[in-house]
Image (cartoon, rainbow, N blue to C red; front, top):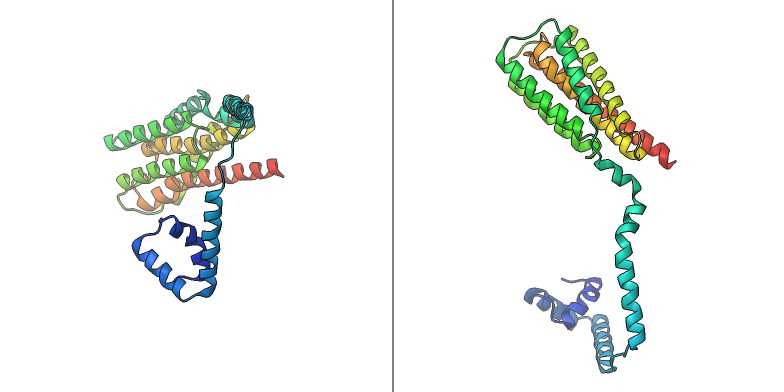
Length: 265
């Protein structure tokens, strides 16, 4: 059954023929047994009939022309007004080579100093794919929300771990080294992303820095796919390789929120 409150919401639609068949039946059934709703609907009908008998207002031609001119002026000025009101948004579309260069350098350095380089073609292929994804995210640092970049990096890291997983143990000794590489790479690429975006709006620079941290961790994960001696151990991959990317993403999001909070304080 319809409530009286719902009846008042549907009364205008009923008068204009906007209700469906079943809803109209329920409306009329309630109306037949409710004096208050009948009085309300009757007042609504009387008001509508009275308004219908009133002559249409005549707008003077001068006033009509003035209103149209004002609307045209507002429409022409609107894009410039919006752009001026959102100056920080314009800086998010800039592309910078600095985080990409930093990602390439960190990837190459980890490959160069790694002492347990794999000979398996699969590891090199996965490493190359991870590196490509990391460099793409580094190139786009600041153009997308940090959550989107983090989700993309984690999805790629998890996919690589699933392909590489072959069992084994946690390998905590290797894990400390892997986490160190990923966090260091995240810091390097984050710094490069900030350096490349420092001349633009501050919010764009912060977003680029946070996204760069995630891209840097993924670049280190790409190199570890080749030089980590435990890159086939399932617990190790998820705890330290994927975990390092997750830790970098969490730190980036926390840093971005903290600075945004300070800016609005």
